[in-house]
Length: 373
Image (cartoon, rainbow, N blue to C red; front, side, top):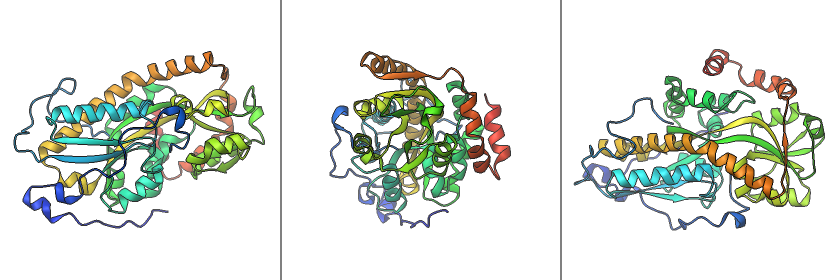
């Protein structure tokens, strides 16, 4: 069910050409992320097809920054800065501030200091004006007018990274990114990224899919993840992400799932040292901005945001696989039991029902995604 949204009123100060009175400023929360090993309470869980003029790699100089008002956009990131998505936030911040000659500041609030993804979305959609941008999991918008985004999180949709990026750089991506805005949710997608394939990890040693049967596996309150875990014969157990470390430690759950870099950065190997590389979902993410914040930006400011987003997306594509492989080697050297999956067919067969249940009414659109491989 789509949530009813509160529509915020744009500030009158916009008419005077100043954004300072419209809430585009930093909160009092710290901007420095806590060290990864200490951030066990970190929360977890588009790009338009037309990029603005300019060289995204080196800055175009095409924007008039002389009379540009100075503004700060608060950007929420629920994972630490040393993760793949944390690096994407840093790349975006650096490029925006470079292109704007320091007139636009991106205040990245990382490690979940502004709450979980749902907390952040509720704040953004509620019109409070304290969070202007956020990196979210693609499926997070499902309950906020972004039903098509659920298709991106269905099990084994993307056969490899190139398949995902074929989608993310296709005209189809814009349809997904702008769905929530077109449905009146109050946010719009700017660009896509990814944080690597997601894998299950468990407290006890396992050797394959059969060992998951009967296990209590942590899920977010999401129909796709519930269906996936049930298909594998396990018991989906909803636990808040900021409670997951202690839930694994105390036996409330037997396992969970995350991308490899997030698994390490949130110190989960300490309590769940077995990682099975099933790659059930590619961690597709998108960066969103509130309509209120977007509409208060000048044309040049919007151009800078889009050019920096294109740059951050390209950097993410170049860096994510390398980062993931580096972290995987670190985990192996630190004694994590990394289990390879030689035959993915049984996993695909076990999850057919969740795909059928969640593509109803969007079968043709889902097929278009599959055809991009």
